[in-house]
Image 1: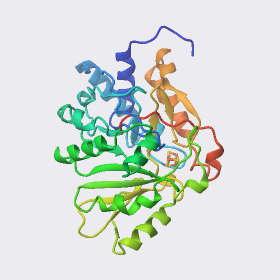
Image 2: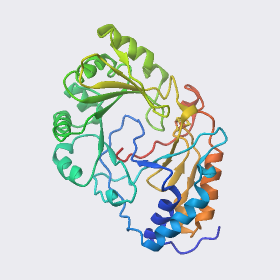
Image 3: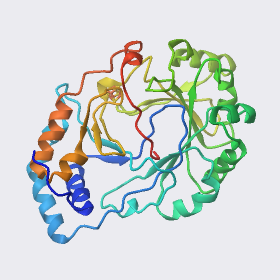
Length: 339
Ligand code: SF4
């Protein structure tokens, strides 16, 4: 495709909105790497004119029923969930709430500025929060993130609970030799607080020095927790859910496990991702990316974009390369956004 003058940002946004609207739940994302980043700022999206909405509806009626072929891969997986990394920069300015049809805005945050920012974020329409926290030991926290801040994170968690975020998700990447001895302490947090503590199996990404021996599997975590709370019960979950949820009877909150490594959920994967620099990534553990930004800047039409996205979805593999093989692959993490 011949390069042309860059399309105005508003038009580029509208094109993507047109393509994905009605098919996708949009949510910010986090890679699962144990590197903590701040909340992210949102795109400015112009509101659509009546004419644009009519055009959009026409386009969708042509492409969207019953479920767009271009978003269905060769294994029959229908991709109705899009995670967008908005920027690599920190701090959130959110006008996303103005996006027509958007149901949920969630951020993943390291929590350090949460207590201060949360009232304004809530006012701006923030629905859900994931706080990343890998330890409950202040000195260890300082070692992991190379700065103080543990107490600020806890303050942020309490502020979120006070403001009614229920459940408040707390993401903990579990690593042997670092924090696997704190599993029961994290579960104990759910006794009197409406938390969903999510234990994430340590996943390999470029630069995070993943090592199989450092990974603590879901089964091992479960065994450890059951030794303390044998009555831990499994909760029902949706087919496309990436988390296996459990609860200690009579506890206010719950715990979940993200088992991307030991029990992947590729068979029911419904997710696509767009990186902060505009690349479509059809698989979190795949290294193939398509630059939608470049196509949009080359004035690609909606039809061309449908083909480009459809081709990428069509190339999506059945599952990731396996617990040991993926650590050998080049694969940059999604730059976080909240979410
Ligand atoms: S590894 Fe890829 S296919 Fe499997 S669940 Fe993750 S994103 Fe989906």
